[in-house]
Amino acid sequence: MRAPGSDKGVAAGDVLLAVDNVSLNFGGVKAITDVSFDIRKGEIRAIIGPNGAGKTSMLNVINGFYHPQQGRITYRGETRQKMRPYVAASQGISRTFQNVALFKGMSTLDNIMAGRTLKMRGSFFWQLFRHGPAMREEIEHRKVVEEIIDFLEIQAIRKTPVGKLPYGLQKRVELGRALAMEPDLLLLDEPMAGMNLEEKEDMSRFIIDVNNQYGTTIALIEHDIGVVMDLSDRIVVLEYGRKIADGTPDQVKSDQTVIDAYLGVPH
Amino acid sequence: MFYREAGQYKTSYAADMAVFPIRQDRIGLAVILFTAFVLIPAFGNQFFLSSVMIPTLVFALAAIGLNILTGYTGLISLGTAAFMGVGAYACYKLTTWFPGVNIIVWIIASGFVSAFVGAMFGLPSLRIKGFYLVVATLAAQFFLQWCFGRIPWLVNYNTSGAIEAPERFLFGIPITGANATPESRYLVVLGVVALMTWFASNLVHGRVGRAWMAVRDMDIAAELMGIRLLTTKLLAFAVSSFYCGVSGALMVFLWYGSAEPEVFVINQSFLILFMVIIGGLGSLVGSFMGAALIYMLPIVLRLLPAALGVPIAAATVEHLQFIIVGVLIIVFLIAEPHGLARLWQTGKQKLRIWPFPY
Image (tube, rainbow over all chains, first blue to last red; front, top):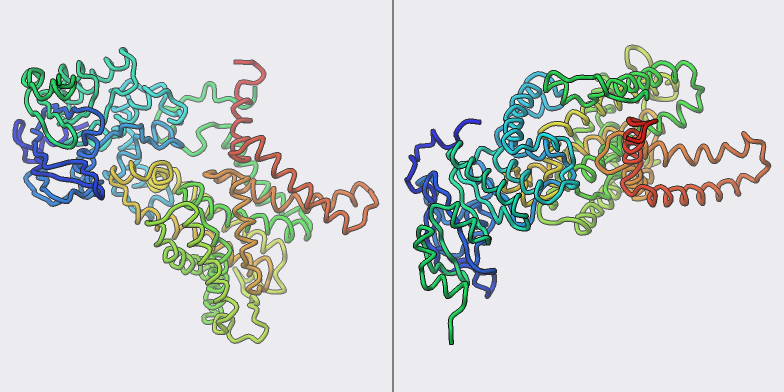
């Protein structure tokens, strides 16, 4: 796998993605109110907050599944009112889901291969024959997928339908599928939810390795505060759709509003 | 003991990605093809060829078409018979306009006409799913069926309202019309079905098939991965209708010889949907198994009493046939809700370790 984003003109440390004054409502329900933050190239950025704080909605805004009523999204220097899923995907934003959203009827291999769809250019004509250019392309992408399989240590379940896998492995396959897109920005929605300690350690290792080896920028939502503090470079804290803190783990840890939000305020 | 891949090492990705990676499967396929192309036409009698094999193959092709849409892409359709009708009527119009062009060309071309019509009726599928899409495809079924009956232009202003397959030749041998022998018709149908099955298998094992299945299994994730939902669904509708259209053209030209609008009614759509469900959603071999079961079983049941010398009235036999087929369908679905194809898979899995328990 090439180092994604290395040739895209955004240097490490520059702002890769910025959301400015984004507000999102569903009818009368305000999911996000006037939130601004940025994600810098090469960092691990965490979004935390209590349940219903608007974290997942924020990710959905970033990859274009929700369209905010107000605000702007700047990605790779290009400012938009809203993202569109196809544009986000083709410009290198990939994503995992809170509740695993794998293609259940397909094998691990096919799931990760499906992540390569955007990179495949072969014509429909040759697909009919599964020979010549179509087969060459298929093999070329299979090699990349095998690298991901090796990286995530899931060789043994290559041909297993993912519906039959245990939850921890499904999460890992889903990470593999997101990696297959060679993303510049990887959005992880609770990658460690429902995992035991050992699985969490494995997943943390993979996240750090992806960040180090491929230089992929990562934005993650996670409830395990210990993991978040250890992994992330900067943290943004949301509560009831508003941003209440933004900074390094140490800054956030000692922020009084954050402590109040998580522990409650004495009356 | 006999069906085991032990010792068959794959040394390239191409070998690993083959549709039949196990040698015994490839031998089995070769045996089936040899039987179908050589033994059956050589030894089959007229009844077996024209009333058993040709219909089963025609239905199998339609079932593959519906399976691409319903089994692989997860879009349920009740317009199958109508799309078959589009193929049949298009082929009739085309071959009566240009009698000089080979009929095979027009059968393929009528598939494209059907694909276009299918894609048109597939447009609502971006917005609606499940039962609502069933209703939309039902509209296609009724509207197209109405067209077949009410637009005289489609039947060349024939007063009987029916289309009749004119005599057409392939390599100088009549393959449609009254003079075509069952052997030649069977071989043409078999050739078309075999080739199109191969194409379908290639499609579903590659990028296109993965996109279809991704949309079926989790459309949101597919969309966020850059798979365009509208394009993917419309392609599924187009390819599916192509298969149904060719199947309809084969049905009228190489099996029935003539057809009225009543051939393409909703009952036929249901019949093909049953074939797909009983055969196995998302399985090509299942389409053949479903078509064979639904079409051949009644014939076998009808012939069985006479063959065994049991004296029963013909009417009773027919009633018994309905009862038995109905019961068998229920039994099969309880035993394996995923269809005959899954039973076949499980059987092969068991055979791999037989006779040892592990």
